[in-house]
Length: 96
Image 1 (cartoon, rainbow, N blue to C red):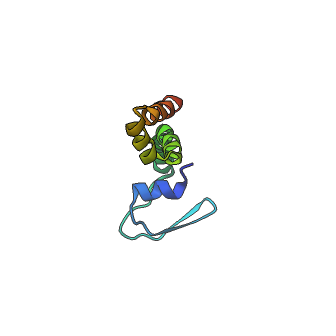
Image 2 (spheres, one colour; image 1 turned 135 degrees about the vertical axis):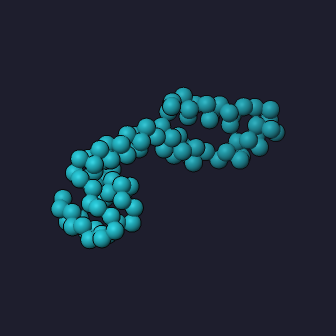
Image 3 (cartoon, rainbow, N blue to C red; image 1 turned 90 degrees about the vertical axis):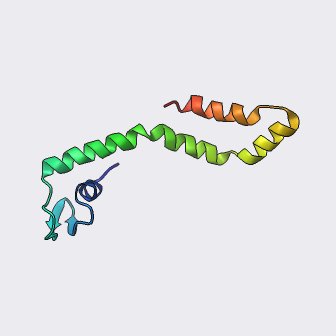
């Protein structure tokens, strides 16, 4: 879940501020504080980007569980397609 701080950091990189509960204390003298509308829109935008990459995070978690080097070596030695089959199964489970 994208939070207010992440949105503000995206809108105003390196801004000096403190967030207590939902109150923003703006301490930056170089940048103006973004409006609540800007912050809300940025949270929505960033959350959309994060959500659109869920399949990639899920795939990576599954890929990390495979011993891919060993699978590829065994496939070469045994003339099998275990590695390709495993990758395709993950891609099918988590489509783009």
